[in-house]
Image (cartoon, rainbow, N blue to C red; front, side, top):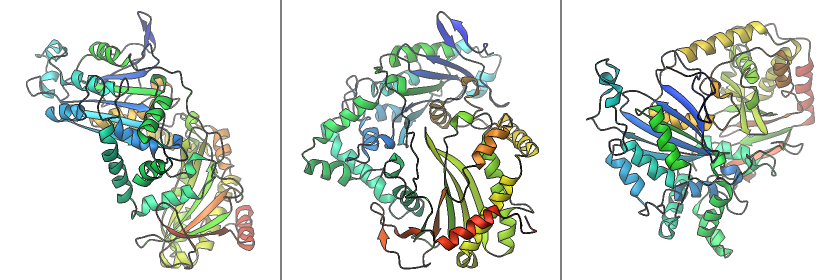
Length: 517
């Protein structure tokens, strides 16, 4: 049974009627604690797993320029003891005793911490809890009976009084370094970092994010920096209750979960920090209209067109970039893939918009090339722009969006429940967005309306003067003259030749289209 959206209970607003999939039998409640920490509580009767996740609105984009990776290092060190539970492994040992685990990750604009554990088998099983013969009052509602309380208390202390134990710093920095080293020969990471390195140097997207022992230990110490003090300073500067979103899932009632959360997490200090935002272009005229030839570790061939784009978070009801990606990624007759595949030049086309951070985004078209396609990459690029020109010349088609709306609604309606920790981690991240709280679950999934104006505005970013191009191949064209600083990717960057750019513009503006399009 759900309450009406926004009902007021004793001075606190509780939002409970979230849009949810048809198969979702969980109960939801959103509250905001006195310290402005927003919380989503999830009751799942009979579940054998409990989980919590906390997402903080600070990530690698907030790294200090002279200590790249500091946000990632703080993520590691935060787990190393608290004032209430000073033993460095108290949290993990508790979770292990209850069949659980913890994970954390640092993204561009947020850091996400979560855990999962198992309820003891002595409490009702899922099937028993669903039985009418088993009273809900038999579910563990006391702190002593539920392992979730102990996990929440240990988890919450990391955001109240962490210790950053001195003797754990070196070990955790080596763990960060190991994570970095395992990615050094991974082409996905290498190409991503190369794209970052070739972006606007003033945009935080440009910077190295993972960190290494060298950037977090050796170089700062050589400058006389007390590195533990810098980690504590970063935490004190950026971590605040009003930047945090908490999700708790358990078999306890919503009222019990709410009481537990308030007892623990209302103590998290609120510094009234502003939300992080970067209103600056990811590419300036210096980075646009360039072509990069990049050499991968493993054999692959691809052409990537990246357009400077907008942050679309506030357009979650219409998802305008979905219209563009649908048309560009379409595989049927008349599609760009059908045309270049018929010529033997490509096997796959993928396209989509992505928000880099509040304030800026990218729209990317990626084409997996054949050997012949690599030789003809210029022709492939011109055909893509010809197709984009065709899209631009036609007004947004409501029938296309209506079909996307229907498909998204069906997929969401019949979506299976995600595992406990996947649910809490994902939703904590979703809560950092501006979604209407009623649409917290559905917002990322459902296209709710057709907005011709927003689609036309989205289309306006896909222009021949607003892109950069990357050609990935192990042996073409050769002559790589640079190595990316952090991953060592061989590459060559140059301005797109004027004659080639003129051909792209001509293709984009041409009123004569291939019959296949």
